[in-house]
Length: 111
Length: 274
Image 1 (tube, rainbow over the protein chains, first blue to last red):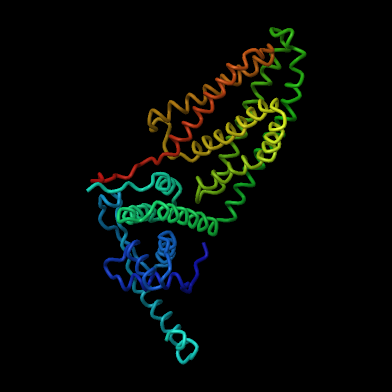
Image 2 (image 1 turned 90 degrees about the horizontal axis):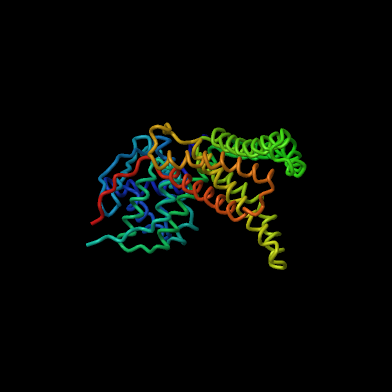
């Protein structure tokens, strides 16, 4: 399978959510975090699809958590950014900031 | 407090068709959200989107093998029908010549040809689904379902026309029922054959239900071929009711085999929901 070298918008958002959540980053809170900050409904399937792509590229690592009765006995999978993931996120953030700096259109939209 | 049980069908579909590495965690996440008050509609939407994304991801990664698998399956099915029409149908159309002498050598030859006709159709059907699941290995159940849908879709224009004719003239209902049975049998046999081709367990290691169903399907097909050929030669049309009962039993056994083969081989160790 061909693997993209750049981060897509959804992947970027998922990585930022993981970073914000720290140790509590598994499917449900990641989706909630994105929904809260973007104001749109987030499908868990899209979150997991992005996470699997990021994992395949070595930008995110996964570890098994606890299984609880409320989850029907299924374990949580926690995600965290790898060093390569954090590096790529910083680069993407820097590029976005550099591109958006000084644009009056963006300032008026934000205010 | 007792937790609400998530909708069974979408969970079942995710368990059987979900290929994502974290499919089990996704189902757990959905159950967790359902327990805190999400609606059934929300659960269904999430499950459908997850399954569609799963399929899209597989298609994007292995689209060529997916298409080739479907082409191979359709080509082999067509080849089977062509061989049957070329070799065995002419024999079947001359069956009336031997009906008056059912114990003659000629009748025996026609009997063998009719049995072989049915056997060849079954063999080609099995080879088709075997090829489909071997050409595309990334999502074998997905490609099998797609192939079965194509098989059913091929028959749908004819069935629709027959259904329309039946509305105008009730005498067509018998033919409609017979053709619906034919499509259901083809679909069930293709599913059972495909699932059998992709099973990972040896026959001896399978549970007794699956082994029993598989043996029963084999015996029914053999017996069905013999009964079908025998009744045509002896022109036993008065036994139509018995034939319908036998065909219904065949279909039910096939459906049961599909059901037990579709079940996951290892169930999740579920924690009791208090």
